Amino acid sequence: MLSEFDLIKQFFKRERPGRADLGIGDDCALLTPTPGRQLAISSDMLVEDRHFFKDADPFMLGHKSLAVNLSDLAAMGARPLGFTLALALPAADPVWLAGFSRGLFALADAHDCELIGGDTTKGPLNICITVFGELAPGHALRRDAAQAGDDIWISGTLGDARLALAGYWKELALPDEDHAQAAQRMHMPAPRVALGLALAAQPIARAALDISDGLVGDLGHILAASRVGATLDADALPAGPVLARQEQALRRRFTLAGGDDYELCFTAPVSNRTAVLGAGRISGTPVTRVGRIDAEAGLRFVDAQGAPLDMKLSGWDHFS
Ligand code: ADP
Ligand code: MG
Image: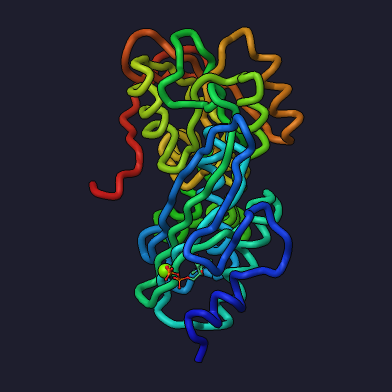
């Protein structure tokens, strides 16, 4: 049976030079921030049966646990530095731990983000990661920075993760191949770190967030914080490849109020359109313009012809 310390040593402590002055093993990790930079810090917790199914694949769970955290850094325009991992495990299962740590470190290494510490305890499976990043002061893509007249943009595509969930819940029948493709989006989200960095560089964008609970609900946070409204073109929203093959009503519903997308929604002045497209290009991330910020409060929808649409949609809320 693995002890707590064997477990940490075997699966989480790595013998390689890192960015931290002191990593796993002492009471605290020590990290020296780049002079003149601001720290960006965020935590996200994943709970069994809430955020993932019992018996979820450990490799994908390792990936997703870090991905949702890196997505928050991306949405702020911060460069990842390191992260801590607080883990409650029902048992020290080496097979599970090997898969989990492989998925975790594959993504961590891709973003040069070092595991610098954490906590390990026995309990119902619960994964809490805190990430640390840095950015130039004044360049953070804050939710309160949108201005009337700004364009609204979306990275990548929306709705395939929600479509996969609908498949698991048997809300609709999908061919196996389609479901597998959509489920990949749900289990292995790609945090848009490179795009976030490019958008924060000038900065090109004003406000940004990552879409975890559906575009409508999440955009609502920008509108509330910035005291503005918006008009979205429901038919301009980029649907995931599987959702794009479904009928229009479902496409609109899942692109607007899906969940688990981890794409960025951001606003930028009209004069920065070329710069936004350039940021998409250099980061290898598709970007689509989907609407505009209005001085008038509230969220309105139009179709491709600009005709108003009447839609009642809301975001995901864990307590409703
Ligand atoms: P303390 O009792 O001071 O909280 P612990 O005994 O819990 O320290 O942890 C020992 C060391 O291992 C610490 O440096 C801690 O940051 C690290 N650690 C514990 N659990 C994990 C984990 N799941 N991943 C990475 N580091 C961890
Ligand atoms: Mg501890």
